[in-house]
Structure formats: structure tokens, C-alpha cells
Image 1 (cartoon, rainbow, N blue to C red):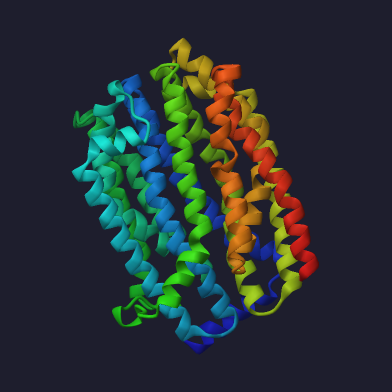
Image 2: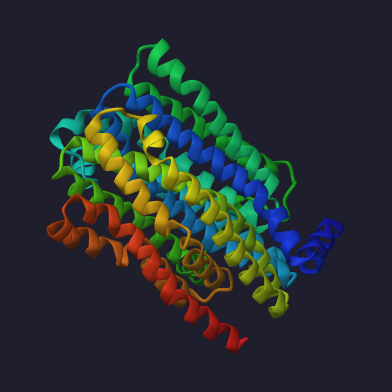
Length: 445
């Protein structure tokens, strides 16, 4: 075990920055691509059922964002501490954060699942469901709620593996679940005639299998930290540290969920076709950003580990490499997506109303999305090194503090185009604010 710890320390502190981030980030990128592709597979196959079913995927996507928000909060909160502790060679303390975060995620997933199953109408309407979409949203959402514990725990395990520098193990779990979901979707939806319930069941089964695979490295002793009841802390300070460090992730994902719910409500004024179009565009945007975000998540353990080891110059180099690489990748992808926007939308629905709304929204998204790596990396930087306030501020700017007010007011002036522009303009504003915050911190270093 000591040899494994020494090899890990040497890899994280001596490998050239660009090579290390790509080495850590590529498995994460593959994982995120597969995850987003299977989310799009749900949208694609369900969209063949009806417009109302297609709109339901957008409603339930907000629920999944809530579950992921708590999973990422515990996962990033623990992972940041774990990586810094491993960098400082405090392995026993790191084990406490691993076990405690898994327990907290399991408990939270169970509570959300039970609440949602008891009050489905209340939950789906709060997420923006219309009367015509509600029935489909309740059916699809019930399976997501059943899989809630697996979804939250899976997020924690995935992030701890990444922060330990074991992104390949994380990739194996997420990719297996994603590929399984893509296989089960058409079988259950069409061959078994389950409709939207088939899409929900496929997602639930895939989530539980993915989480089981992510758990295997811990059970087989392939990781530095361990999962055991005896390591669950009774110290309120450790629990508070996990929550406060992970709070930017909760804010980021939680505000994304609220933002999606507000978006659904505002789009509903223009009809179910607008809701379906924004659901499709949201999935396309997530798929695009997963390329850059995967590399950025490879940056997190590099940043946290080297900060814990006292190697501040490597933290600076890692930050600028990730920002520049992310902008370059996103610029190329967004240009391609902008050019083929109508062809992309028509793959899901070919109604003229959906095509018009979806094309306009997707083009607005592409013309600003390439700036998102700036604020994303900034928030990840401060979260990874334990600077909770600055990370929380940037995460909120990026995820809803700007976009939600814009969604509320822009449609009054510009109609549906105001809905298309709200989130992209928020990306621009968040990036502009983030750069001076990063520069000021580097002066402190």
C-alpha cells in the first residue's frame, strides 16, 4: 500500500502538467460523452412517442439534476479534501471523508426518492410540467426516483475515484451503465411496448449496475481510501467540511435544475413544442460541453493534489492549460453544431414548430457556449483548493444567478428569442467576471 501511495504521489506531482491533465481527463471525457449520449438516447427514442413524451424528458431532466446536485456536492466536497490530504500524505484522514460522503449520499437519495414517490404531482408541477405533459412526466419520473439512491451514491464514487487519480475505474462504471441504457431503451420502449415507462426502467437498471461497478475498486482494495462503517465520522466539523466544500457543486447543479424548471415554465407559454425544443437543445448543449468539462474534471485532482503538496506553480500552469484547451475544443465543436443546427433538431422531431424553436435556441447556445470553460474551470479551481466562497460565487453566476432573471424578463421584450438568449448571455457574463477573480488569486499565490 505504501508503494502504491508513493507511485501515486510521484505521478501527481512530477508528470508534466499538460500530459497529466489529459491523462486524467480523457477517461472522464469518455465517461461524460457516454453519459450524455445515453441521456440523448432517452430523448431520441422518447421523442418518437409524442411531443408530450419528449417534453417530459426535459421535466424529469431537472429532477435528475437535483439528484446529481447532491451527489456532486458530497462527491466534490469529499474528493477535494481527499486529494489535498493525499497530497499532504494524510491517508487515514482521507478515508474518513470517503466513507462519510458515501453514507450521506445514500441517505439523501433515499429521502428524495421517497418524497417524490409520495407526492409526484407536486414535484412534477414544481419542475415545470404542463397538464398535457404531466402523465408522461410522472411515469418517467417514478423510475428516476426509484434509482435516486444509486444516482447520488454513483456520483460520489465517481468523483472520489477521479480525485484519487483513478479516472479509468470511474470510466468503466459510467460507460457500462451508459451503453447498457442505450441498448435497453429501444428494446423496452418499442419491442416490449412499454413506451416512456421503458425509458425510465432502462435508466433505473443502468444506474444501479453502474453504481455497483463503481463500488468494486473500493471493495477489491484497488483504491488508497476505503469504504467502511468504522470510518464514518461523528465529528460535525468533517461533515461540515464536506458540505461547505461541495456547496458550489450543489449550487451549480441545483441552480441548473431551478434554471431548467424556470425555462420549462417560460417555454410552456409558447406551447408544448417549445418545451420539447428546449429539452432537445439542453441535451445537445450538455453533450457539447462534456468534451471540455471532461478535461476540466481531469484538472481538479491535479489542482487539489498539487496544492496540498505545496506545489503552487503547477496549480497555475494547470489552470491556464485547462482554460485555453477548453475554449479551443468548444470553439471548434460549437462552430460545427451552429452550421448543422436544423439537421440536428430534425433528428429528434420534424414538426415545423419544434424545428424553428430548436434551431434558433441551438444557434444562440453555440455562439456563447465556447466561453463556459472559463467560469467552469474557475469554480473548479477554488473548490479543489478549499476556497469555498469564491467557488460558490462563480458557480452561482454560471448556473442561474444571471440566467434565471434573464429568463423571467427577456421574453417580455423579445418573445421566445428571449428564452433562447438567456442562458448563453449568462455564460458570457460569468466568464467576464471570473477572469479577474482568478488573476487576483494568482497574485496571492
